[in-house]
Image 1: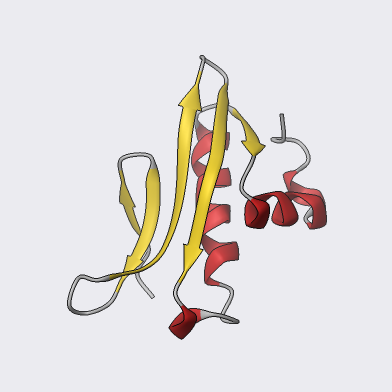
Image 2 (image 1 turned 90 degrees about the vertical axis):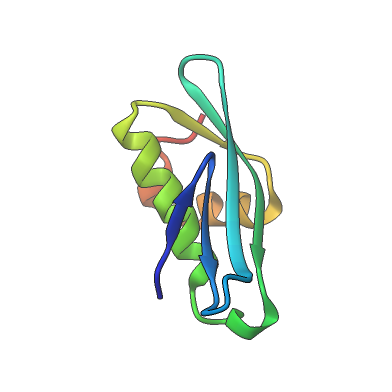
Length: 90
């Protein structure tokens, strides 16, 4: 699976260019980023795609020394259940 990076988002497309999964985030201020949306198409459910997308945001924000506010329910669940994310949670 090829995870692509766009402006303030990571996403997965099918071979025809149709979006199958996405995580969107919004930088706010100098040190914070909000994850406000995660979407995974039914075709990809249960394959860990959402987890991989959230991880891409975590990696990127660690590199930018920003903290994350996980507002969308999926991202919040990932942060609540992944101890390794606590250092970057705002």
